[in-house]
Length: 349
Image 1 (spheres, rainbow, N blue to C red):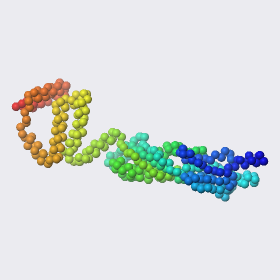
Image 2: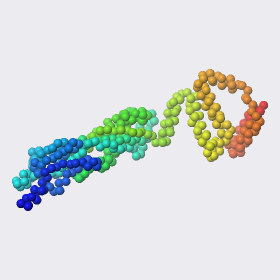
Image 3: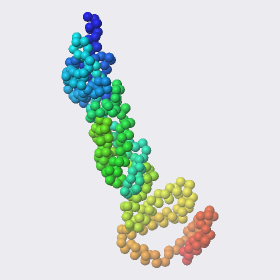
Image 4: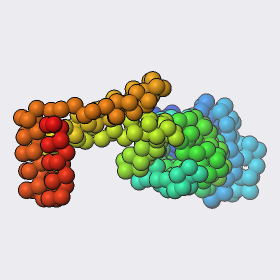
């Protein structure tokens, strides 16, 4: 009788899995050399599926519900050898449970810039990142292609594979969408749709369904971003040379100020001392004035024909001293110095 009790304990009557929330995708029920009692109960909860595998062959796949397991329930197993007739036909098989709930907030990103073709810029190297959600849709295919006979298979185990698929298909997705880079960066939803369309069949090959994917940022490397900023600035002024000069002058003023204020830019400092900063401001003001008043150009032409305003001898001497310093440093040639000197002396008249 003791022997019979021992043997009966080797039969499994209830098969079920309670998820622990640790990101497990596949879990093998621990058989421990035991066999499933004919008529045993299988419970598959919502967001789960179960797969019976015998000697490497998938016998059946069960969705959510409660099942009575018999050799009629599992027709593939009917050829299995039965135990002695006293034991009501027990059978041995591996049972794998699969979580089919969504695995959300999975991260993807480009560790290095990737190169794509663009009709506006030619070749563009961009970075992008976002997140996605997936679920197991075909546990049989996932078992045969990915998880295999492991006791457990987790989201972390699959992470590298899915990230690789995303990165591998980004360039193809952008090319298929035909969306220029500038529009792509501005409309990340369209980017995400193109990426999802490209990835769905790739995920399906391993039994995975891509539920959602988002693109949270698209950016260029810093050196290309500067070029893009300049292109955008020029695009804003178009073919208007006056506005273009205003744009260029506005870009140059901070650089002059930086050079004259940090003590290390001798040329810039001398230029500012000679009134270059004032001249830049005058150019900017004149261009702005011309843009606001159409007759400003005619007024400026009249003003140009008027006699030059005289300056005080002290101002002329101070400017000549500055010019002399520039000549000594080799910034001005003797001819340039003489020409400037003659021009200043005329203003004393």
